[in-house]
Image (cartoon, rainbow, N blue to C red; front, top):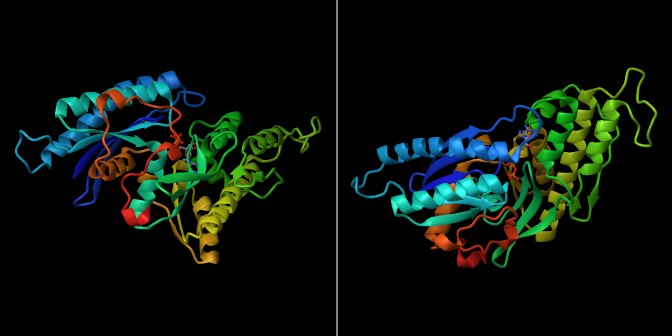
Length: 349
Ligand code: ATP
């Protein structure tokens, strides 16, 4: 099976070819870089409009060159695309491109849930059977585990996604998007200062810690008014270090609780924040302490990428889980627990 995957939920205009026989994944990505501030939905969709034809063109060319069937046959078996969740204007560009390609190539269309793809790529590259998954991405943060035909959301953010929260702080500081890698770098020279830590049951909240981080950077105490130090705020390195310790500590605590609740001894990490070495270190340490296995996919599979869409697309296609054109509309609020899991073996259900 060879699948063309297309991703474009927010910033990554990405296309990929997955060959299930060789397990090869070729990914072409063109990232949207805001000139200032964060991701602007209209600008991001204009980027999709320009970049999707380019990345798809390159991947299709590669698919044609490596296709060993007759030239009259399509070079892929299906077109898989991210249906959501994501920014509506971006999703609509990607959905239109995928529908057009499936018609031109005369192959089926597969609609992939982007969050489930973040999870399944880790399951695919680890070979784990039934892991708990921590999705730590820009617009989301949740713990998922499979039960009775669906991926269940065991815990999630009560407000913003984890990466977006970090990016809001770095915008405040005046750093360019994306902020996560800059926080990771600055944290290397930091020391711990007190910031909120909010876990409620299986859920976490990032808005309070981010407001506190901004206030401490500005030199305003949480009670208002008084200054943290004579020259203004707390050093940005200390805030970055403390943000990482608390935010990743919160994610690790809930991930451990999810392992305990499900009885699973496998954890996979997904999403762009998963590129952070400190987060991976905390999760690996927690897993080692409880005798669980931990897996983080290679970096190209962590941030948004069409590779994960093509890989899950192949599993769905093999299970006959394709979409009729008239049912293929995108869904900006597509939750992972809305997806009937058709591709896992009967024994796993
Ligand atoms: P979603 O997948 O939820 O739709 P998204 O498309 O914004 O969200 P990803 O591509 O998975 O998300 O991740 C992007 C986020 O990852 C950004 O917020 C960025 O700051 C963060 N990020 C990238 N590298 C690092 C890092 N090394 N440390 C922390 N955060 C990081």
